[in-house]
Length: 435
Image (cartoon, rainbow, N blue to C red; front, side, top):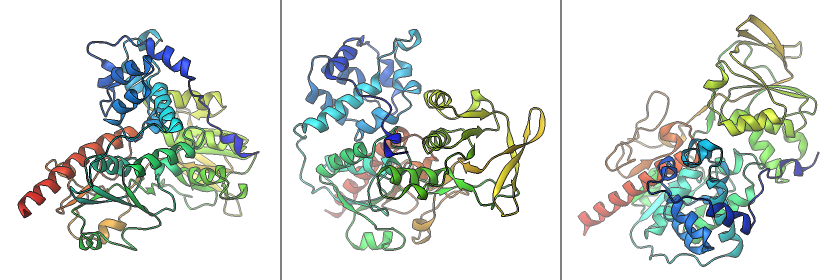
């Protein structure tokens, strides 16, 4: 096995293919594709520019709404959003919007086209905690509007879930790095290896002169299944597998650090996109068999249809309407099977390793070291509508998964864009009162 196992699956368009695909767009008077996009990208606008070969104009239109087009073009659930709303989609001929967005963004990066003119960073000073989709979106939006923005990130590399939570074959890390370089080019500063709540607190940031602070830390703590046998060896979090496989594919750690042995029977509990990513990663790491265990039906699964179909194609099996009630171990204290309820009664299913993909929740490291930020019973940060995204502490905002529960990349971006507008309004108002 080598790291080519994680090579990106979906090939990009050539220039001719992209322009030919763009020419198929009907340029609808009331574009339903735009309504299907959570951030309301001007899809017909950038596709029309692409159809004429105007790459720079197409990129400028995308930049009005999105800071991460090369990423969204790869990992958005297009069939549920823009593409699925295309009037041609029902006939099986929908415009491949995601692939076009990705083409334009990649072309812009590869050709190093002239960047937009940026205002002086004199409008205010904003700290952003976390460099996942929400943090990068807030930073990019505010930097474009003349704010001096610094991102504080606990890891050694920026990107958050984009870097460590989405497999290389779906989202190459090189693409993430290039998108982050574009955010940096907007004048955003990055402070790495800085765990807010330990090395620095929100109070410290205000003392350093920041006018507003945005918390975009996502949901770092995975949930566990509360059934007997949950502490047996061999039961691990899918997020841990994805993280280790990600850094293995970048040649940072050796193969034996990835917690899947060749030939193992792997069971995955959960049926969202993380479960699909974990299953397809386990296949690539040489698992003997991979089975997803889900307590509802195929129609109820939260995973997007294309990811499910790819998993089936790669040999992943599914146990529907199956609820785990106990993990069973061997004499050495390692998991050997699950006991589950099925439509046919209780059954045992043998597995060498179990991966949990049943969701995650926010860590309380930041909230616990700061006064005045209220959270709900599950630990999610409570925010206001005016100014949008502000927490119960003045000047501190939050957005993305830490507020809205885990969602897709583009939904985190949508929420973050609204919060960025709230931050701008707040800082402007404070400056006006101080003048």
